[in-house]
Amino acid sequence: MPSYYNIPDGKVAEILDTDFSGLVTAADLYALRQSIQGTDQSAFPQIQTSIDATGGVEVSRAGRAQIVVVDTFSGSSSDEITSINTPSPDPFSDYDLITVVSKSGARTVQIGSNIAPESINLSVAGTFATFMRRAGKWHYMDSNPKPDIQAQEGTIYAIDSTSVDSSSGQPVITLNKSVTFIQSERLGEVAAFGDAKITGTGISGSVTITVDEGAGPFTLAFHSYSGSPTAAVVATALNADSQARKLAGEHGYSSSLSAADTIRFTAPAGYGSLANSYQLEAIITGSATVYIAAFSGGIDGTDQDQSIDWIFGGIEGKIYLIRNKMQGNSITIGAGANASKIVTIPPDSWIIGLYSGSVFQIIYAQLPQVERLLTSTDSPYTVIDGDGLIYVDASTGSVTVNLPEGNKTAACRPLNIKRVAGNNTITADAYLAETIDGSLTQTLANPTGSTLKLKYSKLRNQWEIW
Image (cartoon, rainbow, N blue to C red; front, side):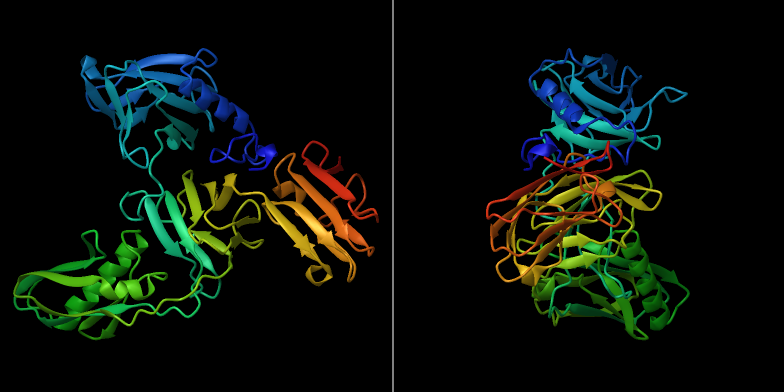
């Protein structure tokens, strides 16, 4: 992890204070975590409260970042927090932090799965759950123990797995859950499909179409009817219900009418041949009869580096984690996307963003520092997030390194460009009218081993040479 993040590996990696005026710094958030885990809580204001009979906890504001010491209802041995409430009028500001701890090790306070990615038990020293205030709501930020967000996708309600979709003409992703694992469109992939054919209706009945991916069945579509409708009417209703459920984020399967009385369900992108083994079933009541044609036709594809032009599905004021689930390819949220900055997510890395005003405001990024070797065939090369040390071999020609847009890069972000061979010109070129120590470009000195050491200054709005 780059030193400028000021946070150890695996922790909060980056906060863009320019995007969030007054937001606590990464160091403050880390200090709060260390304070709780070390049981030295004296550096932060505290309030005492108890869970009420309905599972609610009311918190008052004691500071920008504060500790809330919670006891169970009537001193019971264990209790669950299902809501965090504030007095009226609301004394909290956007980006305030509260960290919940249990008052007594003899009593267990549990954070409910409706306000965190999964239930979190607070019973021993060092356990906690931190929430951030935004748009009048509390949003889960951090905890010890941490939710198992790397568990098998689908086993925790807050996790979704999806692929980039270019069916609309541009590559996009849709956020349905708080934690979204994404992968590229897979080259050569063919999606598996299965059919549900309505063969009889009778006077009344109902049809539920389910799929079992191996962890138990869940509903793709449901319709209840009376009045002896035709098979086509029931099929049309089931298709509409399936599409509505997909839009609501209940499942990722596409559906269409392959015939007037037949609904075709297509597995999500990325499932490939695996979906051939999924079980498509019909649960019927009354006079309904259905013929099921099992999933088939799925063919695996291969991952590729991928760009994203737009992020759909975000809820105003909600925080999302986007993780690149691929092991060998990167995903880039491009210049045309509704994100606060251009960012490339390396394999098995992630970013955290706040969806605000239809813009995905990137506030954290877990991005490893990358070493890169450039030659004249790579020129011009544009620096991406994660690039930390760039070696340049100028033996076969000149090389230009384009710096990223300063206003969308992290404060004090370091970047080193080192000549490792050759005498041709090596040029660092700032973005548009931005400067490097007052100049639009800087030329790297000729001797092999010369290094241009840069840091971006938010205060001076330029790249500084160190």
